[in-house]
Image: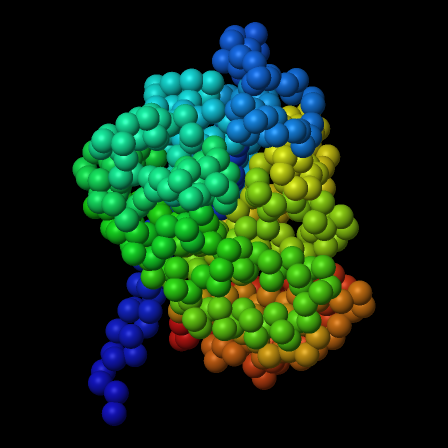
Length: 509
């Protein structure tokens, strides 16, 4: 027999779960990725030219990146040292654009001193790249972002450094150097040392050595805690190469420096085991599932099974802190991957409603195009932003607004809904008032199905409105009949308390 108020106490505990998630910024992110060199031009283009001596080149903002040739003396490709002249100050000047979209997390690709434009070849972890600005410029960016309720996440490249890095230069020159242990030198290797993916410009760090870990994250003055004085978290480059032990140690060190810091990692694998080592991951796995479904290559019932298994294996908490990636600086842009606008709208709607944080790569909101590296790294088109006519801009703002409007889409649990030709699920909290029933039709014809949202508190006769603008329907005996147009996602929410008088919901959570 239940004790008096036992149900009320349990309900309060459930509600507290979602309140705690809402209070944790890492569970409710809308992420915008920026390559500072390509995002917004410096106001003083003439001054920027002085940073790029030959063979490095400053390109015009209206030029598009093209694949170049390998430069044996520099040991990089020529397109890696073409620059467009964006700065941290110019990023700060355009934060209003992020606010207008509903973004609350700014992710910056590497900003530390490096030779290339992408800056995954770190020369000095403790110095802002001079072409991007100064320490003061970085602090101003963080301060202004925080004033506009935007968190800042940095890119941590800790698996390797650049060939011009002082540690590596000394270690290669002097076998007795204390930095010799930072790297794996072996004359049997092609370049005489271990390098990432065979690239001679990227010597790998031996993170099995404690002095390396001390320098990067383990000591109080290491790289990770040093920059968390101003930034809010780290995205870890090639986290899969660092391995679970190092990732767990790094995450713990970041949390010692800042308990609410976000540590998320670049993972191209199934995420579950990796979420035991970090707060979140770049959920490439779920991103690919969305693209496969939107492309018509993945049957809805298989999508249903794969996503349900992902949530069961990985757990909802880690997935909420993870970024759902459809495109980024390493992958073709969304418009190139999905040339059809309706399919892009389909993908964007699922990215915003499945559990996790949608990550938007700069320029996707105006339909920039680009294939493989370096084509997808073109400069931002601010004329298109000002014109406001790109359909992607309205789509992106709409799905972000949908997410911000419904608590279940921000921090709610995921529950699969049985369907034949549709991919369907609910996002839910402890209250039926937050329920969102998401239905996606990836076919080229309308689909009508009877769905069971699996919510015992959804009352008979409740109108169900499509928050994405489609026709409403109604709940009847716990079931909802839907007719979904081709290549369309709908998000049905119960209309509760719209009429005066009798209220069926007055005594249910």
